[in-house]
Length: 143
Image (tube, rainbow, N blue to C red; front, side):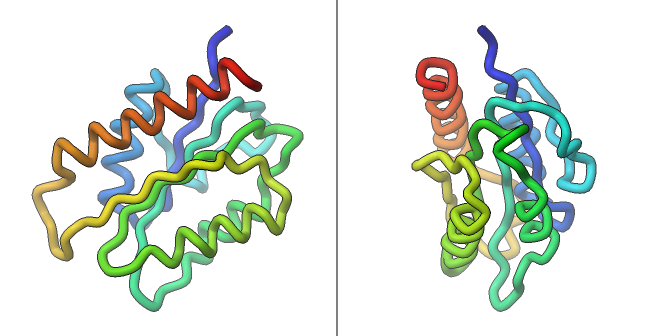
């Protein structure tokens, strides 16, 4: 049985888009913006990526999460990139709990340097790939 994986990212996040595309390729699917996601599509693992911005609440991401349903999404995995603090991840986790969504216990966060134009380092990509593989294995073996 193959695990059906969808990888989505917030539209304003350039580095998250790169990481989402990398992870989607590993999962043999395509990354898409939140606005392109089909809420009626059944998926075993939904991977959501975003970036942390200081003093900026991500309304797009919060609205997206509020529309998700256990009926169509079996598991949710989160990854984020942050510059200073990782508080948005905590807010998103709380939001998933508030809507009683099937959030995986593990999340992936990566600290990046501000104004970094050369992309993510190989260690970040390798760690993200390992995270995705672990979440897919858990979905395949236990759910």
